[in-house]
Length: 118
Image (tube, rainbow, N blue to C red; front, side, top):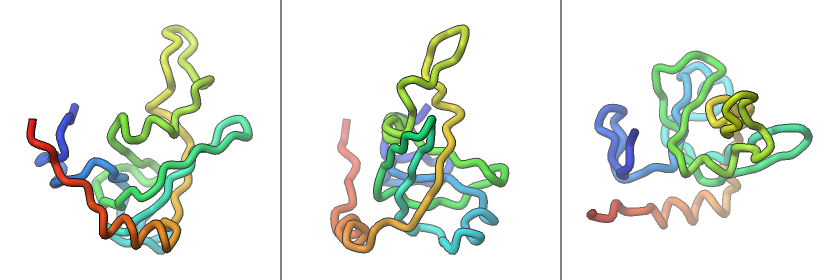
């Protein structure tokens, strides 16, 4: 579990709004490392979107992605829960990715969050 803006295991520094993706998936979507993207979840006809995440190539199986929580919490449908434990299905959320909208992307490049000392 990572609670900071730095994750030295994965090479992340000063950022938490990242999406870890397979290199082939990145290329097949016309994306590249450090591109800004919007992520949309799809569940029972509903869509939820988080904006301005950064693409990070990572050794992850094709067709899978990974993100930090709570940053990705808005993607998790509140009505999608495990049958026995009744907990949110945070580890299985169907998503699509798209380049961030141009205006938003340029603003995000200027407004990078900085790590706050504890």
